[in-house]
Image (cartoon, rainbow, N blue to C red; front, side, top):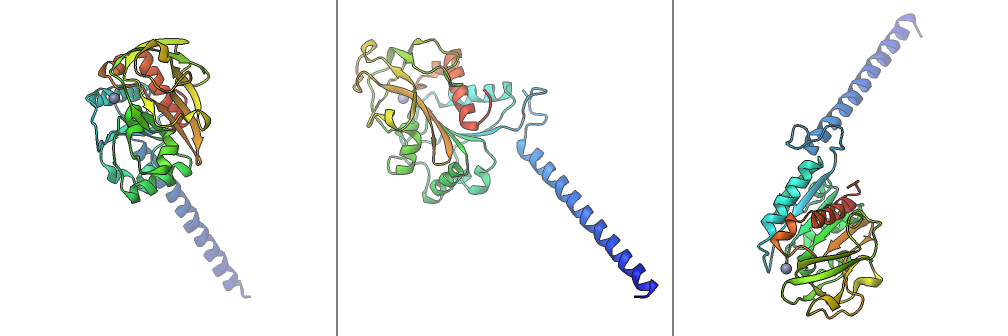
Length: 272
Ligand SMILES: [Zn+2]
């Protein structure tokens, strides 16, 4: 090769390197900017300096059947907790949000007091793929009164609601304190709620955290071991459920809010 050719080769390699380095730099920058834009945490009220600002949850409260009057209380409580804990929370009743691309933005999806049929076949399939990819689910109260015909969901939430007696006081036995949703609760926790009976006892398929003592109220029909909150790893993801949370007062009760937030953060795979 002539001297001129060598110079040409050198210049070409140099030019190519500059192009590759610039492209990689641009990609890195745009990915970082996208991540920041998606977290939405920067500059939001309640953002706490030094805390992990990357956790994002979707709180879904669509109802296809019974609608709890406490839904606005649940939303307000989770909005306040998320702000305090520097977690980004989106609130919606729009099932169209259940797409692969949108669900992938969330560490957990909370079914807050949902009921009845709320997702179509495509939305259900997207949610199944989200959980299989390591996503998180937290169900509150009537989340077990939801999607009876979607068998995968029934296993995710752990059981389906059957019936309930009138709202009254009862004592909950916290049988496992080694979980963020129970670590701050007393061993025997007396409170007022609507105590669900379930169509099946989930004790063999989930890890039960709390049972309700049927001797302390009227209308329980699940026997001596009546699960009322639990969690499990399911189909690649995390699922947590509490049957508590019927009443508006629940969402002003510090112990219930610790229970709820601990469960949501377990589902998100984050520290409470
Ligand atoms: Zn209820």
